[in-house]
Image 1 (cartoon, rainbow, N blue to C red):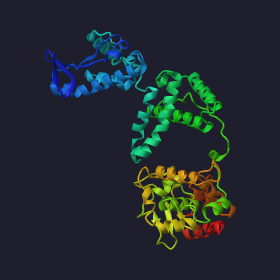
Image 2 (tube, one colour):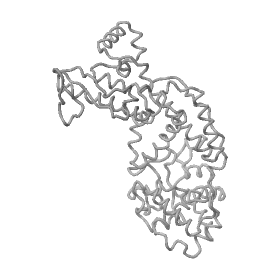
Image 3 (tube, rainbow, N blue to C red):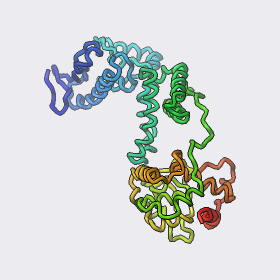
Image 4 (spheres, helix red, strand yellow):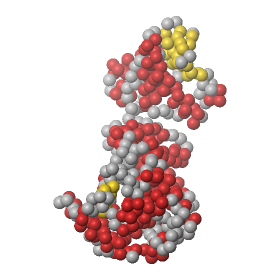
Length: 440
C-alpha cells in the first residue's frame, strides 16, 4: 500500500484501487472503540475519480473526528449530510430510509451493497441506511440558516454578519449545553423545551439574564428550527411554540434624556471641548434626527446627504455600506437645528466612523466620554435614549401621528400610508422646525 501524494495526505493505492485512510489521534481511540484509523474504500481504480471522491471521504472523516473530540463517543448521531458524504465517497447515493423501505427492489439492492462491505462499522452502515434527509443536529441549524439565507446575509459586511449570526449560535449552544447532548432536531421533545424554559427562568431569577434575553434565545431557536422545517416541507410546529416570558412595558428599559438636562449640561459652556469633533457632531445629529449610530455612520455622502437641496435632508436607506433593520426604516429626514449644524460641519458625513466597525467605535467613544465627564443624566442613560427623546418631542409638538411613525421608521398599523405620497418634504420640514424651540 502506498501513499499517492504528499499533497493529498490520506489517499492511498492498494492493488490498483484507492482508499482513504486517516489516523485517529491516540487520545480519541478509546472513544472510537479502539480503532486506530478511519479507513474507507473509494471503490475505484481511476486516479482522477479517486481524487474527486477523496473530498467527500475527507468531509465525513473530519466530522467523525469532531464528534469524537466534542462528545467523547463515536455513538452519537451525525447529520444526514455527513453520512451522505461518506456514501458519495464510495460512489453511491444515500437515500432516505423511508424511500428505500417503500421500494422493495431498492431495499434489496442497498442491503446487498452493504453486505458486500463485510464491515461492522456503524458509521459505514449509516451511509447505506439512514433515517431522514429531513433531519439535522442542533449544532448544524445555523449552518443551514446561512445556506438558506445566503442571498440576504451576503449583503452584510463581515462585522454585521458576525453580529447577526452570533446571537443565534449562542442560543443554540446554550440549548445544547443545557441538554448535555447535540440532539437531532427530530428527537427534540416538548419536555426538552419546557426544561430549557425552566432553566432560563432560573437564570432570570438569579439575575444572570433578563426576560428580553431569554425571549431572544427562544425566538432564535424557534426561527432556526421552523426555517429548517420550511426548507424541507415539514408541516409541523416546533416544540418551543408559545414558550415566552412576560417583559416589562418599559421600551427595553431605555432611559430618556430630559430637554432641561441637555440644555444645561450639553449646550451650556463647552463641555465637549475635549471630544473629537466628528463624535461630537454625530451625537448632536442624533438629537434632532432620532437616528442611530448605524444609520448616521452608514450614509452615502454622494447619495444620502443633500445639503444643497432647498430642504436640506438625509436619506436613511440600504446601500453598499449597510442595510436597514426593517423595510420601514427607509425614510427621508429634513435637517433642522442641531442636526443641520452637525452636517454643515461634516458635509461628507461622519467619515471617521464610516467603516464597518465605525458604529461600534463611535458608540464606545461617545459612551466613554459621557461617563468620564459626568455628562450622563444617570447611570441608566445612554445615547440610545436620544431616539426616544426625539419621539417624545414630536408628540409634545403635535406632529401628526403618521408623520411621527414615518420619521421614526416604524411600521404603521393602519391603512393611511397605502394611499398618496405622504407628506411633502417642505411640509415635513415645517413640522420638524417646531422642535428647534426645545433648545432655545
